[in-house]
Every structure is written in structure tokens, then in C-alpha cells.
Image (tube, rainbow, N blue to C red; front, side, top):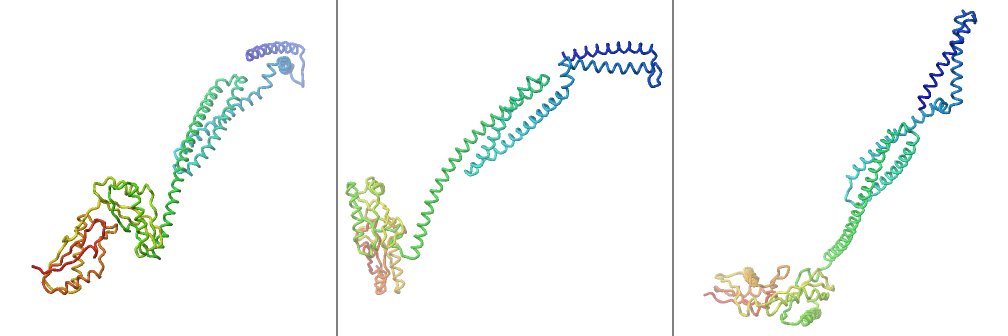
Length: 430
């Protein structure tokens, strides 16, 4: 509307100037006025031009004085251009901020791929993400403020309405995208914190296991040191003693018999006990290791073997473990176990070796028939003296002979083979 008024005013002003200039030129031409020695016609032309300029200046002055719209259009043009330039600069700045946000979001996606399961790294990532979340929150507030500012500018800058609306939509989309990313990162932080708690729990459990292992290692080192400096009374797994019980006894009777066996052992001579006492086992151990096995046995009796559960030194309290087996006779009294025919004279050394071989072969047969070796595979405790006695008898027998090994009494499963339950006989060979 202002443009049409300006055109009308300029046309009317130009017509008025032309009319006034024509009249003034004619009058001056008729009077034949001469300035500065110029010809009258030239003088009239110069006066006409100057007069037209004065009239134009006066016209614009009046327009500025009496028309606020013309005054604003003519005088505020530079100010409007400056505002327009500032607005365009603000738009470019918003575009740069948008690119910065896009770069920041890409960086977040790259960093999110680098999460590690380690508890310390997870904590560092959570801190970093929290910082980024704060930055995104600040950017979100800045974007919201800029959106509000642009919305206010829309009402005063109608010419920029279309461009600003597009930019506003982009900024709103960016704002929504940023909020979505913030929610995603918040969820990631929650997941990472949960994972960190799990790792901390695992670390705590591992520390407990490490503490237990260190304690056990210290105990083992102490035990090694003691083994190097002292002779153990009972090696771990070695048999301390054994006894037999009927399987039809009541639980209380079995328990009493076991505790009585502890007392009998501790009241034995010092050579047997080496100053050690039995560490009382729990009732659960007695039930599951002894009573339950006896109750499910089909045999009339069970043999209970008591062994050292760990290395024990003279004077120690020995932790024990139990092995329960069906009891029966391996060799009855008088049973011929093995024999060897000799048809030549033997020396003492050869005779002693032959006696040892007979006992060894007898032990093999006993194992086949169910004799129970101890945990270190010992089944016989013959002394060199016992071998020498029979060796001397073999040497003195000058004729071909048979050397026989008999059970001198009933040999049950849980005993050792020794000179108390085995006997040698030497007879002439047929």
C-alpha cells in the first residue's frame, strides 16, 4: 500500500515540477535575463533546473514533515536493512548450532558403541553420559528460547514469515530429536548402573573367594612349614583305627559306639595316639557318612574305618572322616593262601626275598577277595625281623620243600596283613 502511495506522490510531484519549471522558464526567457555573461537562453535553462531542484527538495521535505509513513520509509530504511541483516545472521548462527548438535549426536552414537563390561569403565561412561545429558539439556533450553524468540519475531517481520516458519519447524524437529536422544541416553545410564551393580556384586563375591583362598594358602604354607620342621603324627588320608558294628543297632547305639571308639583311641598308649585327640564330628556327618550307609547295607555287620582328614602333628586335635564297608571274612582261620615249591638250597638273602614274595602274593589275593587297603594302598605291615625269622628256617631246611602261607586266624576286610594273622609252614616237597 505504501509503494502505491509513493508512486502517486512521485508522479504528481514530477508533473508539478514540470509545470512550474515550464512557466518559470518561459517568464525568464521573455525577460532576457543574463547571468555571469551567459546567453539569456542558457541563463533561463540554468534557472529552470535550479528551481526544479528546489521544488523537489521542498516537496520531499513536506512529505517527510506531514506523512509519517513516508518519513518512516525514507528515514528508517537503513535501520530496517540492519535489522534484516541481524536476523539473517541469527538464522546462520542457528544453522551452525544445528550442525554442532548433529555432530554431537553422531559423537554420542560412536561413544555409545564403546561401553565396556568392566565396572570402573562403566562408571566413567556413566559420568560422561551424564555430562553429555547436561549439555543436551542446556542445548534444549537454548533451542526452546530461540524458538520463543523467533516466534516473537514472526509477528513483527511479516516478510520473513515463510522462511522463519521453515526454520522454526526444523528447530522443533531438532528439539524433539534431542529430547528423544536424552530419553535414550537416560535409559542407557539406568542399564549401565544396573550392570555396574552386578559387576560390583561379582567383584565383592570374588574378593570373598580371594580372601578364603588367601586364608587357605596361608594355612597350607603354615602346614608346609610345619611338615618341613616337624614329623606329622598322622598323614592326611591315613587310617587311624577301625572297628566293627552290627547293622541292626539303633541310631543312638551307633552314635554311642563311635564316641566310645574315640575314647578308647585317646586312652591308648602314647605310641598309638602320639598325644593326639579326636575332633568331634557333627551329628550330620555321623548320620550321612556312617548311620545312613549302615541302614542301607544288606550285610549283618559293617566295618567303620576312621582316617585322618588332614595332616596332624603330635598333640593336635585330629579331624576325622569315615569309610563304611560291609564286613565279612576274607580268609578263614587255617586257609592256605599261597605256597611256593623250592628244590634247591637258598641263601639267607634269597630266602628273605622269597618270604617277602609269598606275603606280597598273599596280599594280592586278599585284595581280590575284598581286603580294604588304606588310602595310601598299604595292606600289610610285615617287619624285616619277621622275614628274617622265616628266611632262617628256609635256609636250615636242606631238602626240597614247600613254603606255605596260612591265615592264623579269621582275617576280616579292614585289617592289615602282618605276623599276627599270617603264619608260614615249611614241609618237604613230595
